Length: 406
Image (cartoon, rainbow, N blue to C red; front, side, top):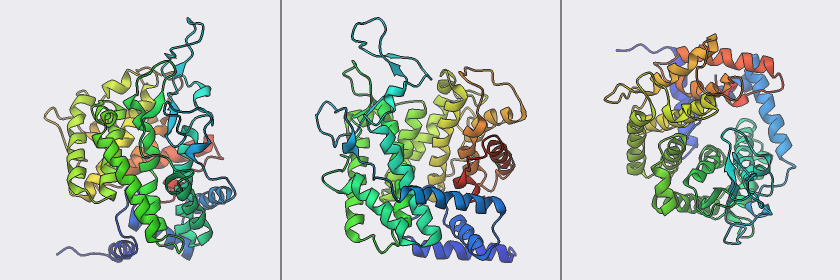
């Protein structure tokens, strides 16, 4: 019989309490870590860094209280349908063609962001602000139990998803458009991570609020279900499922997370199994991500792809699929890919394409996930090193979502 210490019993108790409060499991957050962090903040045993992170969270949430709710109807460039409720963005690495009088069709300069693609004339800046801002307010509500935060978060959700005058239609047919190119692009599905990275967990946190009711839940379930149907059954969505680089990984994360939230276990299982099989196509025998290394920002995109894959592995844990220890027939695995990237922290040269100096903070989301797996606790030391180094270089950048749960 295994002897459990008081800490083990306490963690089990926290899990039981948390799961009794929230109707579903989280996608990215962890119930026990949430409850543990909240308890330490309340009883004064939290670390100095956790308290700094908590104060930064509340400061960010307070700023959002007076900001206008983002809406898809505020864009000034219309999609081909002329309907402002249809989401529209322009692909960031595309520029006016210098060889044509009207600049059309735009041409691609990989890794070089055209600032004209990131303005409020299109939806992408507001889409990202909607997701992350709602998540911040929901976390602030959880930690403070102050309804002022939940009320604002819920009003943002109503604006983007529920109110008929301002809601977004549940598809991404016109995401990452390219001026002069009439074709709809499956790469635009990447924009949808602003939903799945933040909304399912935010909805869980808000479910205990007095401002949240069954009508909210029903309408959000309908919207997310419709979006999942579009992802898996539309012509563009099916094309997106066949992508073999980071776009394919983020597509699978979206499908797996929405299916999990909506209780579609068979779809979750099949999607995670596809993600496992994709490792053979994405990696070489050394763990190098061949599609991402072809990019001009190869380290960034290698991290970006692994962020999606490690998030998928977390969902796998929830339904009994161990993606962490999965190895393909050619011995390719998540850890092989992670371990190819981490040596840059100790000064190892990156021998691949890069437009700028390597920014290894891209490893933070990956290691924060991987370090929670009991077999990869060594990653926590690397994560702490990166966090401290990052915040020494940028003292105003408090990465609360990572410090808060260490």
